[in-house]
Each structure stands twice: as structure tokens, then as C-alpha cells.
Image (cartoon, rainbow, N blue to C red; front, side):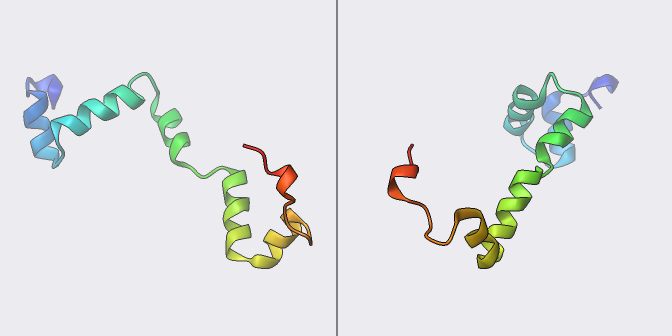
Length: 76
């Protein structure tokens, strides 16, 4: 679209987005290749593990332990 001489504003309108969204995405993903940007959106194995723990209390208990977290182990 832009290669055909269209302005950014016109291309955004045609695609149904705003010009602000275009610039925000360009700032965030501008130097990345398509596969790198897709990788950011894929859930990591650790996130999947935590989701299972939240969904199943038995898995959460195995991860944390029978007594739960001790206050001294929870440091920020």
C-alpha cells in the first residue's frame, strides 16, 4: 500500500486501524523479522506450566509444596 504511493493515514483507514496504532507497532516491532514478532506472541513452556497450575489445584500444590509458601521465601 505504501509502496503504491498511499499515505500512512490512508493505508491505516483502509485496514481499519488508526495511525497511532501503526506508529506504536512500528516502534515496538520495527526492527524485528516476522518470525521474531510471532515468537513474542507464542506462550512459553513456563507460562503453559503456570496456566495448568492455576487450572488444577493439585498441580499447584505439587509446585508449591504441601505447606505452601513460607513468608520468608517470598521476597520481592
